[in-house]
Length: 380
Image 1 (tube, rainbow, N blue to C red):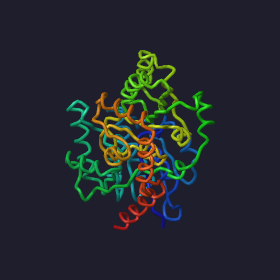
Image 2: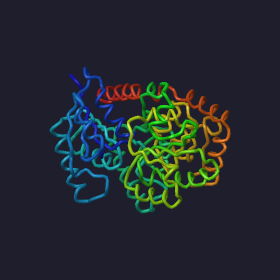
Image 3: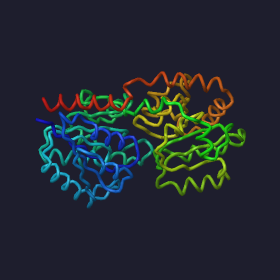
Image 4: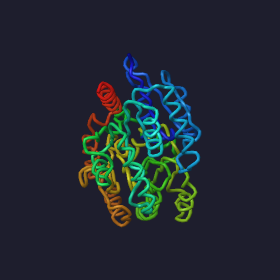
């Protein structure tokens, strides 16, 4: 008899957690598993999910990212009702809101096995203390009804245990996977640059991520303002979108960077854009394990990142790039200009970066690890 697996995520936005969740439910071994997916509506990947064969898809309108007591309570009971009707052997939750409500609903519905993946924690040291306290308390409570807590980096285990969330034996590392082969391909850089209106001689600095406080894209723009004054042939590609777009556009205008910074929105040609990139920069203030860094390293690009969480785990300082103290604009600009002025160092870091990314970061390996875990826990 097949094992019935149900994944729950807050919203199918265009991000690592969402993309990996959709890939997992789409690629589980159909001879062993029946898959279902529950999400709040309105995500950019909703249409992709609807087109996916062999999964049962459910949308809960009240499952929203923002804290809303009335909607949250309604979502909880709708999730419980859904899970009772689905009769899952195992529920696997993702993201903070769905992780908390989904696990409580699964417990109330009598689901035998409950798993949660932290793709990065919903709380951080930049929040007000009482907001963080509430999130931490909720995670502590739901950890008690979880059979396994999956994290994407070892740093996340240390952070979780430091906040007294779960027990050490509950944790397991499964990397956030990508299709590594796509990023090792050769592309026509001249053609790609021409299509973007760039000159063949332009140097390219790229960042990827949604426009939200966590990703802190405004620091990338501040860096661009300082670096572009000394390196006039540099262009800055910003891939992503989100609620903070007006703030980012305002900052670009204030620095008169309209001809230097390109806001490309969400793109499906990330391997091609990384192929023309000279330096990848990520100014996130907290992370799980940023998939964009893995993509850049597989593409053979040096990485400059703020030294937080999973970023510290994958970027080797002064070997594959540079780790910068968060918000230290002086060092960020200094290291960026160093790499721009030293072609040999960029090439050396990029080659080392590509060698660093092993098969544990491959998305199909990620699915196989989850399948093994599902079978083990359901059997128990």
